[in-house]
Image (cartoon, rainbow, N blue to C red; front, side, top):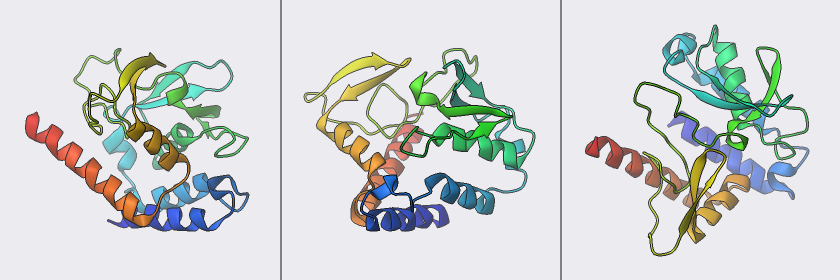
Length: 191
């Protein structure tokens, strides 16, 4: 609930600026870093190592890299921040992980899990061929492959992209949160 409230408050602040998240007053990564520092337990990197796979795109050569072993809480946070970095939207200088600059792994692999041997749960805020994601009416979309993943083109997904870039009202955010909870519960029930 604390994390949910943090994001709702951040969305409210972003909506107050003329350019939204593109405003120089907005520092999404600094805010995210602060909340991760505050909310992640000190041993979070131990809990995440070998279990959480974070997709990153290396800036220097555009290659997809999976970060899954972390030596400290700070290193875990660095990987998470890199995975959230969208050039221009989040700034012009990407953050670094282990001394190398990375951006969001979605540029080179939306769901790059085929190389993993153990079962993997794929999660996305967008409708696609994933384990946990919204389910839109199949009569309204078509699916296409991009960046080693699949995305469905639908009015709902276009709205979700817009909401991801420019935060909607708290009421809409609450609906999105509830839908994500229901999607996760449905997956757990079926599996």
